[in-house]
Picture 1: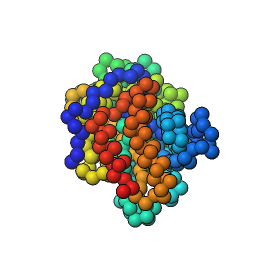
Picture 2: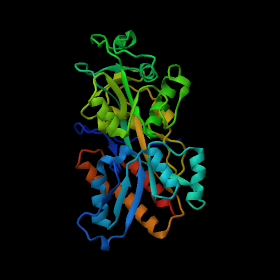
Picture 3: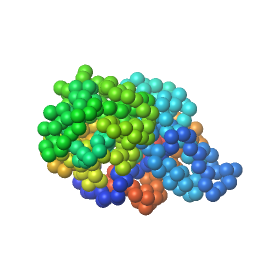
Length: 362
């Protein structure tokens, strides 16, 4: 398996914002940015759709793309499932997804890409937060087994003895636990369920995975939806990308070496150990290796968001716009994110991704 170089970075603290971001695209609705230029003088529009986890820095990247290269970026943040579907239907040039294509989707991509396979580029890596709303109870400690029991209805009260044992000295309330989950087809949901199936196989029912939630609770649309519901409702809990949980209470997770808080540093220690499934240009992360990592001070519950695109088979115009955008995100885009509270990804990681970009459409 392919791993990051030993020189992979140790990220610095950047305040409340926590994300290891190379590319963040999209808004809750379609975005089209043509800042400071006459649309008649542009090189056209690059279209994408998918994961809401990418939405927070779309204007930064779109501004760079239109200013430096005359390309408009239109990205519709509707969720991973919708993004994959629109990509496979040839509605958009690329899809954004927190999960790689499954076998059936990969087969369909051959038709969409004129006989060529689709590739994955993991441009956004951010920690997954277990966010909750318990007034006066900060630093809640949970194990994967306890989390699985909460999410499948095996633990229904905050003062359950099993939770109290994990949190000595904290007076947990005698209140019902309200689980909030993603109601849309979500790659974040898929990653959370994979994490539970790998780390708590005895307590996560039927080892359920996939983009549709298999646990209990009430649904909300998108990352902003679940975060908003928890912030507005006491005694609730959810899973959400770290960037959305900046102002929320976040659980410390015990991966085997004691409870670890979600910070830039703890996520970075896990990022050092990311592996790809193989040495091809199709850069799919080995999530089982990552999620079962047990290193002191490491927080391996990381969400990888992929840009999914055809390895070949585009029209010359789409090929040019897509590759210009990806190159820009790997170079000029990094200068932008570093000045806006994001953490640029390590050079060793960027080098691997750039090799994929340059190998595409040959």
